[in-house]
Length: 275
Ligand SMILES: [Fe+2]
Image (cartoon, rainbow, N blue to C red; front, top):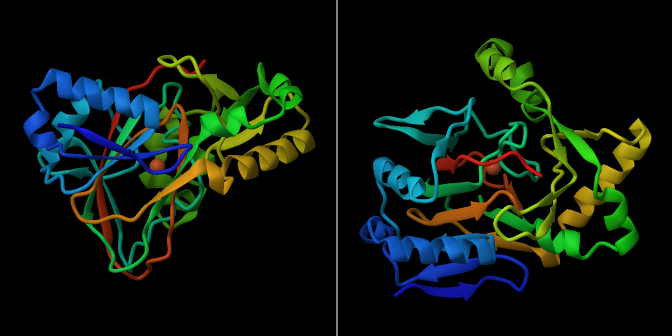
């Protein structure tokens, strides 16, 4: 029996009493999980031993799979991406973001599965972009509705692009992902709720504003989005699975574990064009 315990008032829930491996072919259980996901925006499931192929199978119950252009894949599971940070190759992603908003159709859901977890540090934060939108004043909501923002792969991966060999390694990804426009306020296609949809990793500017206005309004929105009361925080253990809805949340990996080794498996499901 699936048990759900909220992690904070605004976002997140721990799901227990549930083995994903056993529930793979249980339509009712998967339906219940999806319903909880839409309600709580991010779910945490402890002790879920899942081989890459099984993780991929779980993700495919939530929708068709979608690949990231810049990460290596797990052997034998072509849609499972490896996120790994080592002393030689530490992770570079530190900013708050929603996954792959540089895409015209960013993924709906992300599943992240703990493999190698540092002794200390390496938590992940999530924030509710629904709670953030709701807490804005009516005049500001009115101004933001109808604005569009530019999101760019190059902007998010600028550090990787400037390292030796980076331009060559990422040339195909850059060519396949020209800048895209998304609404600043996104309406969730399944719940009808509105969310703030700009993030400091990929959002370059708000198109309809002057450069200075865009810079200052984005800074205000990014600060507001990460208000502590809209967030929750997960301390990873091996075989913990986090599943979140990218349409209504943002997340931030905390890079406080260098030079320890950290490795996660990730799968994303295909999304629609944000509206
Ligand atoms: Fe991410």
